[in-house]
Length: 202
Image (cartoon, rainbow, N blue to C red; front, side):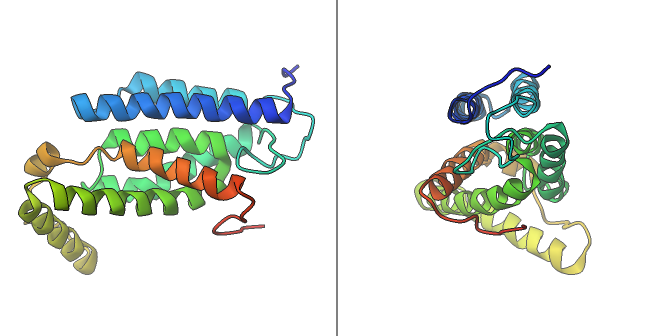
């Protein structure tokens, strides 16, 4: 039998767990330029377990709803897979690290597939803002612009960009976990202020 948790308490628990683990991910990403697999596994397992909880609402509305309720294991797993599918192409293009992809997939386990798609839009927007700020404030913009042109060339012709300098890009790499954390915070503020999801699927 699943443990019963009041909806408001369940939502608060989800946000606390996500907030703490994402903060730790940003911290380690900035200091060590990596996101520990152990941290990702904790976040993923917590997402699955919290979505198995019984709440009073029983609506499967998810954590961003004004009537929050656990999604169940199926939708939680679908959220993780959605996050993986959305970010995997960025890893294949060497624009993101594997840790970033795994971290976003773990967040998807908390929120389900529909919210994961909406979150991805917020994360990409946050990443764009952070990238522009980094270009403005730190050296190395020539390298980044060169790599962006190489990636755009890859997207245009469908073949690997020979001009992409992955090793130097890694040395300069923006901690994308900050964009993930910022996107989650922004979407939470958006939905919890009473606004509808950016993309509504049902």
